[in-house]
Amino acid sequence: MTRDARQAQDATADPADRLAGAVPRLRAFAISLARDMSLADDLVQETILKAWSNLDKFDPATNLDAWLFTILRNTYYSFLRKTRREVQDTEGAHAAGLSVKPAHDARLAFQDFQRAFDALSPEHREVLILVGASGFSCEEAAGMMGVAVGTVKSRASRARKRLAELLQLEEGEGMFSGTDGATQAVVLRATPAAR
Image (cartoon, rainbow, N blue to C red; front, side, top):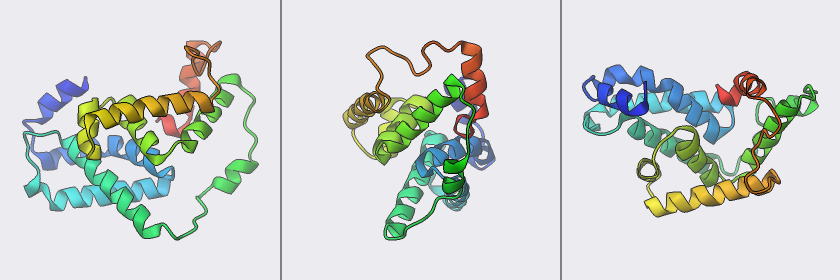
């Protein structure tokens, strides 16, 4: 079912009944922002609690996903402001550095992508996830981020350019050039970020 068809179907349903269905999309967005599974789960839980307690403020004629993504985004940035002076060792970061991954071309390319994506600014990661991975339009992303549509387009363009620079890609070159589609599918499904 396409996102537009899902939105049309959801527009008639009670928003309280639709909250549970939004959890997977919220979790994927939270993981992309926080880069930490435990924090992402906490953010999703906090988002659902805030949404539940403020359902009377939600306009059923608007996009529930956009409303929830905005709550999650604001919750994340509030968390960052509160913890900006803390130094935190991300769970599993040290262990991941010690592990040896198989030297499979697509797996290595995906690891390169993950490192490059992590090196982007939070604003660039956010816009790529919203516009690229989550499929929101620039207008919807602008509403969620609280910025102008032109700002979203500009950030997306700069983020894509920066990602290509970090990956040292030539113009028109893809991440998995020379890798067959079946291999790409296996690698992307096997990675936590692709779920």
